[in-house]
Image (cartoon, rainbow, N blue to C red; front, side, top):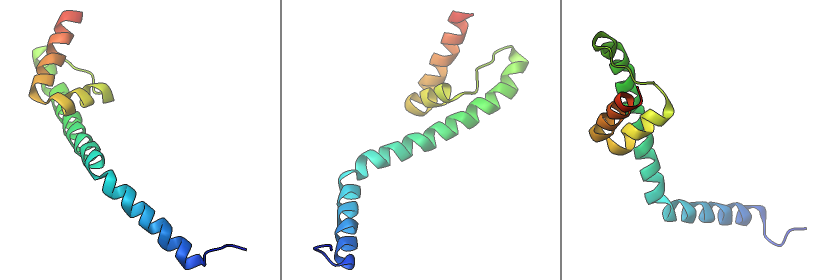
Length: 88
């Protein structure tokens, strides 16, 4: 036998969930922003792989490179190109 009625337990769980989302709204927003920026970075890598072959420059299309582009943007793209050149 439970001490709270079923609707009270669901209401309490809902309040706890709302409180957790309220506390975590900034980190969740940052994670969503990083995911969107990394997706754009992945698309840029895919486009660059098509065009870069004409110039003899290629970058791998993978999650690590996409995250570097998502975090650093255009300087990250330059960093990836310099790493590719230095490791070649």
